[in-house]
Image (cartoon, rainbow, N blue to C red; front, top):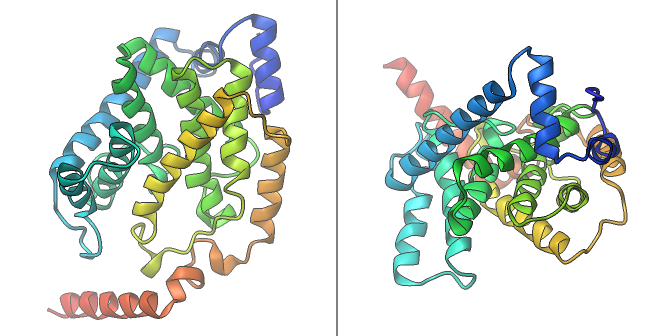
Length: 300
């Protein structure tokens, strides 16, 4: 088998040649690369799934604020809202947005999460895969298959672009996570390999140019809520794909466009907190208040 898979075209061709699914190709590649057994790879993936579920469960129950005091109770607000007024889009929507925020709030509390692909985008993949797993009552093996499928999208993506907001803006963090989640969703929904890659393409091309402009340099504003939005973005991509709506631009070309977009993006909008939301009046005020708070703390 060809173990050098650095494009989506090569991934799809390998699947066709070997008559295997994406997760089968990737778990064999991982086993080969790290001199492990396929079962070792699946066991590791299961441990990641367990960490994701634990983060969601903790986050759903906690109202603890982050050290900055800016975030930490949004998931609880959602839960209370849904007790009184159900979502217009049903229970699955409620779960996805709640799980995404629950996970991100656990991240800002400095508790254990699975970075997928980064800490700042850690709520998107778990929210989608675990919500759909509950909906379709997946067993452990199918959950593992879905997560490996999602991870494969991230692996190919990272062959061309570093998954860092400092390099390409949030399009390479939350954008990549949304593409991964879309792929996992299509696998769960019974899509084929071409549809899985197409879902990733749809998610990626419709998030091009997303900046990374965290207020006060913290992975909180707008990061927490952005995870919820991008999780739903992934579901949109999956739904379109399952209707056989194709991206007219292939996934590999979208990655090239995303790389170029990141290179053209101002450094002020790539994790430096020197532009965008970070320099709004409210953003500056928050930064000033936090600076005063921490300087007083350090002085005492």
